[in-house]
Every structure is written in structure tokens, then in C-alpha cells.
Length: 296
Image 1 (cartoon, rainbow, N blue to C red):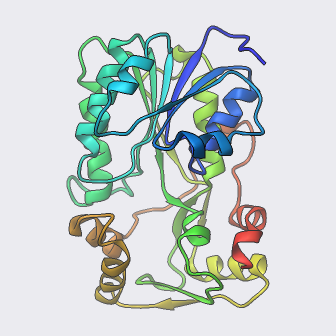
Image 2 (cartoon, helix red, strand yellow; image 1 turned 90 degrees about the vertical axis):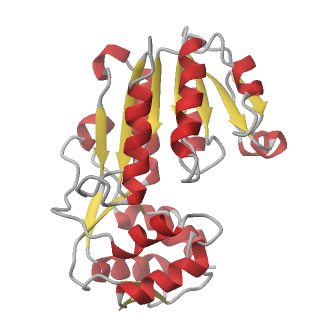
């Protein structure tokens, strides 16, 4: 089906669980979408069952010439960049190209600060640095930042098959902020399909539910149909485990942040239901939706 609006959205990170839902939601609104992906065949399979005005552009972050060529004619962008070390430079370069091509709004997947003090958390700081860099681009359009907390999907897709225990350094009754990837995608789609002036340069903190490790274990147990327990470890033990698992993905500064991050006043984002037009998705609902991945 051809697009019924004058909008055309350029989407990065389109084959992941967030980006793919952003694309699906936009296509359902009859908005034309272009996805920028490393593997064109993979993208074609991901979106094989979706109708609508969809264009696939193959490229990467090392050579942005395919993106630069494809950008003219687009009005908005969903910007999602994986990685840590080059995030600021990559996002700034992409945003600069987008605005130069006529894009009027960028919805950037950033990160919550977890109320960390300045430069105290390498993960949130690099995202904030990227936000600031994009806001300084001359003659730019709007930059809307989405700042999600911990992804519920981490407990589904980043855990071993059939796991019966998970670890962290927190006390069992310490509250943690969690966000459903579905809520992130739906908020992004609302902003990308709505009036740009309604959001301008807004920054939206996104937390769907606050739960303790004990409550998280109960939700996982219920969905998986087997007992899953929480084990409290020391920050050093947590760091050593993450260093092995993440050595090829993140620098030590980011792994340190993962292993020592404590929130101040975790709470469900008061405005998330306003943006969604519904209540946010709970851990129970998200795990039930992804039960197939938890039961293998």
C-alpha cells in the first residue's frame, strides 16, 4: 500500500526488537519508511509479511555514503546506534547528514541517566554527550531524546537457554527500573507520526515498571514455568562475570558502570502513559509475550 502522508521516515537499527516494531507501527499508519541495514536479505525476511511503502538500503556506519545518497526526501529519522566507543561521533555525523538532507526531526534512542552525577556513569554519559553534540549542529531540526532504563528483553535474550538463576550485586529487595522494548517503540512511533511542534526538543524518560530482583525472579518463574531465583553477588564478582561476557562489546568503563550502577529514586515514568495512550507494559505481560524464548 502506498503512503497516504507526505512523511517519510528513515530508520536505523531496524531489524532489532525495537527498530522492527517502530517500522511496523509506522507502516501500519501508512507512513513511508526507509530502513538502513547491514544485511539487506535479513531485512527483507524480517519485513516479509508487512505491506506498505518500505525501502531497504544496505550500508554500515563505517561508510555512510549509501545513507547520504538515500536521505534526501525524508522528513524524519529514528536514530539508534549500537556500540559505545564511537557513539558520539557516529550519531553526530548521521544527524548532520540527515539535517543537511532536509530531515526535520530526529528521534534518538538515548539512555536514562539513572540520576547519576556528571560523568559518573560511562553508559549514560556517552548518550548524553551524543545528545548535546546533536543539539549543537547548526541549522538543525528537532532532536527528541528517548531515555529508556533497563530493557526487559535483557532477561529474555541475553540469558543462557534454560537458565534457573540470575545474578546482580543489589539487595534482593532493592527496586530497579525496567522498560518494555514495545513501549519504547510505541513512543517512538507516536512521536515520529505526530506533530513535530508538539514535541520540539523534548527528552522523555521511559520506565514501564519498578521491580526488585525478588519480584523479577517471580515474574520470570511464572512465565517460564520453572523456578528461577536471584543470587546476590559482590560488585567485583559481577564485574568479573560481565567482563568475560562483554569484553568484545564494551570498554571497561562501560562494564564498570554496569557492575556498579545504583539508581536514586527509581520510579515509573509519570508521562509514559500520556505518550502511549495506554498503561505501560508490565514485566509479567512482556515475559508472557516472549514465553517461547524463556521456555527453551
